[in-house]
Length: 330
Image (cartoon, rainbow, N blue to C red; front, side):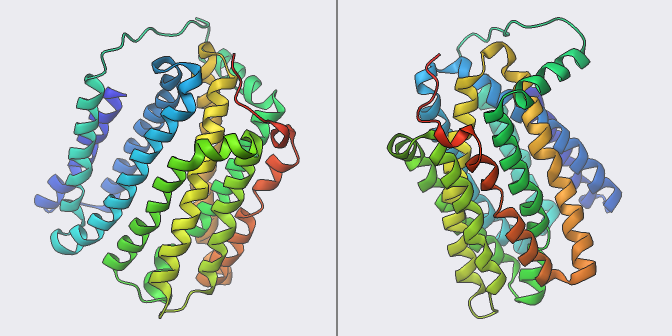
């Protein structure tokens, strides 16, 4: 995780440096995006696999809730500041915020004092590990349903979000600071979702919390289709706020359930497989959104993709996930 953070910091640093030297190009941005995305995969898979070794099993949900509350707070402040930073400093200079952010993250990770013992596991080939990870995820009906739910939300959600900027900037005439502020205000819902996720799971059960989070995160976004220039800012901020609550309830509950369900020795392989499935569809969704906008227009694409995304909860609803009451104790 430390190496991934340092790598992302150095990679993103090439953008403001290239802008200063007047050599920035789209090809550079493609390479930086690919490299930073690759490093993010390493960080995120390790991050989720590392949590169960830092805390006791009974503390996993609380740990994830606190971490997600921190993330949601940053997601509120980040886009809000970024919108104004881009306007005042230009986009390449604003990227320096990410550079310093990843450096700070790496220093924070250096401060962890608990010994890090690598989990046991096979010393066989990478292909063996891939097959084992697929077997864990696809061989369990609960994990398979969670993967399908998340993949559906991400596939069609990313297709809609790929069109959000042309939709809000072009059709609804929002400014960059307004879009950033609305996105940031909406992210405050994530703080609330992180704070109540544990209580919701205890009150209605783990499975129902997963379904509730998936439903709330997607259905409310359908209102974006009906936005007008006069109410775009307020509507987007409000809808994003409620959706963020659902996203955090869903993510905290299903990630904690997966971490408690799977033995530590195969956490990395399970998380790598899950992330390959649920994140691998995101670039596909972006391409789908772009292609669809050419065929039926930006506005229609936003509406269609949001409708399809809202159906993701059905995978979990018609699976054993629905009847899960508590997190596994062993």
